Length: 297
Image (cartoon, rainbow, N blue to C red; front, top):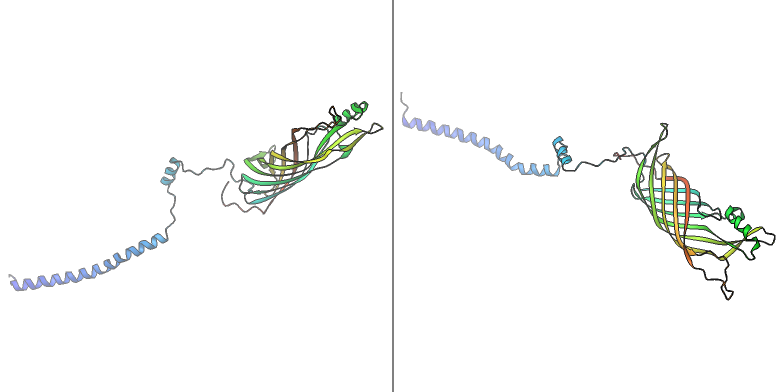
């Protein structure tokens, strides 16, 4: 039986009404979700999730030269950055041919990094009087016994204060016959300082025995250039054995042999370059205590 046209129209309108109601119920939540999306994006930007390194990303970084540079020696035993170094030391001046000069001193350094440090040092040269005369000086005095007024000038560095920069480009490990490993670093120093030189005159007294008299002038203070090298052998993370050698180059007066000019006046002395080569050894103490490592070196 054919449905009357008016009934068919009523059924169609009823179906359209039900579809419209369903659409409104579905689209309302979707609208609220769309409105919340910008807020979710803002929260994600403020709290980013830590990015994890992907193998492909690591490979690309390696190809582009972004691979982290590793030190040759891993798990470095000692760290010096932001630490003070205090070193009492004893030593000797080996290149003085006429007199023995034992040395005592103190080094103080602050390490800005593992390679660079600023250092100050104070060194004192001991005066051994006649006991410090070497064989060459005694021989010259014996030769001069028959020469009236003979005098042998002797220069002895008595005090030196130096401020310099230290650069340590090399560090490593030494295996002592398979019994243990000692960590060390090698450094160079360069700077300026002041050196006080004691001038003396060695002569023979009336009985032919050597004696020392104050020179002319008795002492001089000279600006010096410091150049040196050294090693630190680390016994612990706070204590090291230090071996240091440095040259203090300075311009001073020529030796005074008491020469007179044609008028009988002392000959004016000129200047010459001197090198006070100082070797020392001591125990370096690093403070404060080394902080635990967070990364490998």
